[in-house]
Image (cartoon, rainbow, N blue to C red; front, side):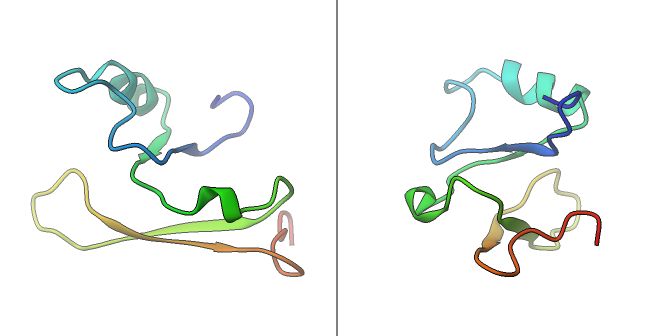
Length: 82
């Protein structure tokens, strides 16, 4: 995935791994990819380009955080290289 230019993986389930397992988390981290879980309304996103941001909380000493996940679709959705 990293070789394809992806920055991470987002999904609508509580975890990319089964409970008590961290295999996928470690594989993604070693590849430099982020992992965003518990996303909602993914069916409302277009198949085409859109911009996405995950705005984390600043938590001292934490390695992860809940995020405010936002997507921009429509005319301003694709700003690659601009």
